[in-house]
Image 1 (spheres, rainbow, N blue to C red):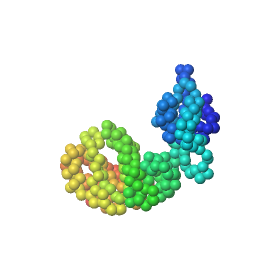
Image 2 (tube, one colour):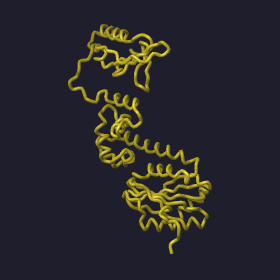
Image 3 (cartoon, helix red, strand yellow):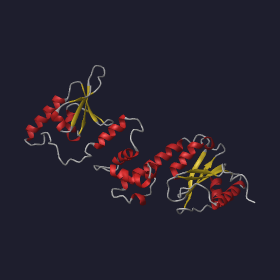
Length: 318
């Protein structure tokens, strides 16, 4: 069973295949450029399969009925619309490419497509009718990775000619969707027992940001996440942190502990002297109201740094 040969239908961009029999009934699929013929295919008993993007016929081979209907329509119209289309010498190379790429993606394993083809396919949902492969390669060349592309700023994306608000909306939705998927795993278990998930979540949120951001993760008595809040956003290499504001918010949420987090757009996760001094000031202020500072994490594209693991929270400065 497989593709059935039919010259006239193939010249119309229609490809008919015989599928596996189910309970003695043979199924046929019609794929290709079916959109202009959708009403006819439905009237002949076809059923649209939106997942595989094919028309399904059960029972008899639909080719005679389709050919007969096209012949009747041609005779009734007296026009050339029903005739097989000649091959177009200037036909764009990407005609049919989107469907072929989707078919290959659905038929393969999860990592079957390289990054540029996965990004190219995602761009289908935001950019109609044009070849999106060049844009996908340009974006990866500019930002280095899929994560870098999705986390690029609006100003950076605006540098590309084919960029519009549909693509920007798509990338923002992907970014938020991915972060929320990881966060769901942290809402039921203690954060300190789920450290790898925490790091994955924070990297998804912050590693590729081009502006320094300071966040607080507020925890309850079981160290389960109460809230993840952005406190400040600063310049490319500095964001102000005020111990009094951190304490005030921790008390308002009835938090028992918290984790401080900020990113380094410079891509170097090592703490600076101001980072260390600010962290100790916040730790001391929290201790006075009975709230524990479990850690301060610095996130960057190269990795992350833990103040706790570096011993920077063990002793107060002299």
